[in-house]
Length: 485
View 1 (tube, rainbow, N blue to C red):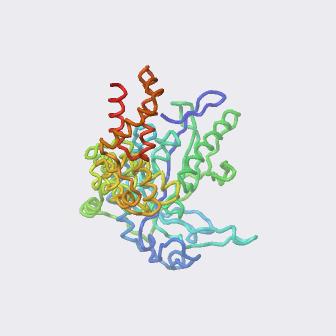
View 2 (view 1 turned 120 degrees about the vertical axis):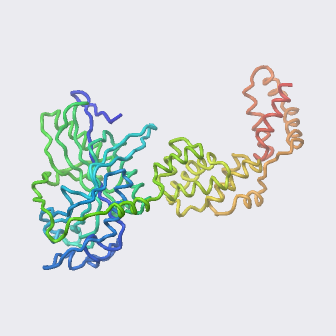
View 3 (view 1 turned 30 degrees about the vertical axis):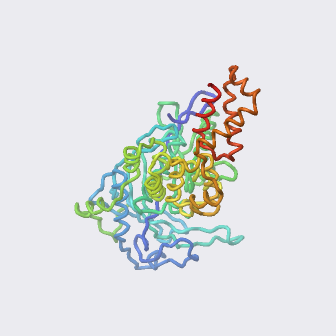
């Protein structure tokens, strides 16, 4: 179900398509040998090709082609055996050639499909229109000097995959789920690191509103959104803006807009060009790219188990529900961590619960990534083993887990050091139960008079005397036997 905006004239529906730019994982740029490392000093990673020096000719980077094809295959998309690089002509200070080498009518990847999982447990297929290869532009720096703009060409010529969706999304939830899924896929196969903070992945959102089921409205493009949080905020703000404009008698202008997260608004950047404005034509310096079946087959064989396949396996082999399986396969590191913990624990469902609830909760609070977790997958398995063999209770296990998170010590060592072993000796527990019953005649009579809820009070007294180490099952059984007898 899509987001419905309540306007003064009734309900409005959002319609969206996304263009996601993903930087290809490669040591050099799309058409030159310059490095692609993030964080270099300005203009330190610029070849004569990137700077558009006269007479310089582009040479296609084969690794970038391979990663583009692998990504297309991972998106269940058609691989076009013939594709053509074209010049997209426009002037901007950080585009030294005066054009961007991209693909237009004949991209390397055609139509495909991505399945997204939504917060309500449902899933939806989002169509992929195309994936094409193109070079990135440089960067204009406007905050380095009071009256001048500086140009950094380090990103000029960096290889990008532009993944264009069909206008199949109807809510911010769907758009963010789609971006997260794309990010997961490209990281699984290693074609992009998905680091949105460093600009390795960014999204443009094409958005319009209409009466539910009505004709498509005029769209605007929200440019260069570099976090999932900003994508969500920008969609919600821009959709409401469009409804307000239309309902007040105005018209939506086809334009490119920027999102300002500090002011919580979108603002006009420039009128939105149509394809013919760019005067696309095949690049005369680059021959058409022609792929053989064997090459495509090799790319297919190189793919790992993808998120959807892994999710289905986790549900089938480990008995996990769709939500837990989806969380655990979101990235390969988490999935591998879970499988190691499940193997060590001998109980996949308990392992999933401890990871998604206890571990992720503490990692989020500490602002720590799983890769830096102070608790290993094997240690989680060992902790679950201590619960299953009744060495410790589930309640004590959480205290042990806190200690593990602080110290990285093994759970068994913490239990020994702190004397936390569960009391399972029925005789010892029975003596404590008898003592509590004998010394609390009023509560005993109240329980036997019908206030059976007092059983919890008695359990609490036993746990208090045993410092929480009595086996809860044994305690409950003994108390019920003696109080009901």
